[in-house]
Each structure stands twice: as C-alpha cells, then as structure tokens.
Image 1 (cartoon, one colour):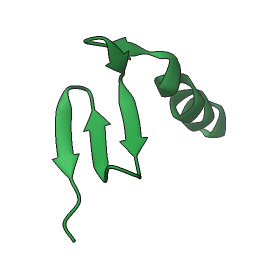
Image 2 (cartoon, rainbow, N blue to C red):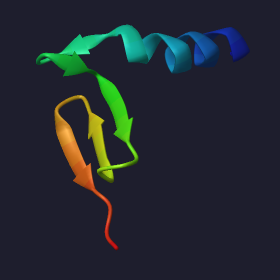
Image 3 (cartoon, one colour):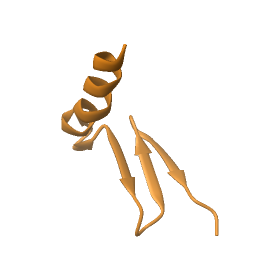
Image 4 (tube, rainbow, N blue to C red):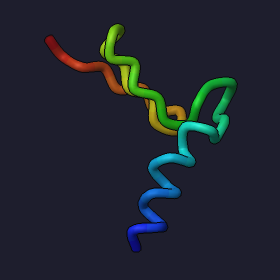
Length: 43
C-alpha cells in the first residue's frame, strides 16, 4: 500500500491534463487544479 500511495503522490505531477499538470497546487495564486477542477482558496 505504501508503494501505491508513493507512486500516486509522486507520479501525478508528471501526468498532463488539458495542457497543464493533472494536480497542481498554486500557492501564490491560491488556486488548486485537480484534473480540470479549479478550486479557489478563500481569504
């Protein structure tokens, strides 16, 4: 199980999705991109 979660965690940053990373946490802009879903942080 540890191997699976580590591959998932480190592998998602290399997976392309609509021209950007599949999972991207943009902390400066406070935007989280997860497979095409864009989440905006409040505050």
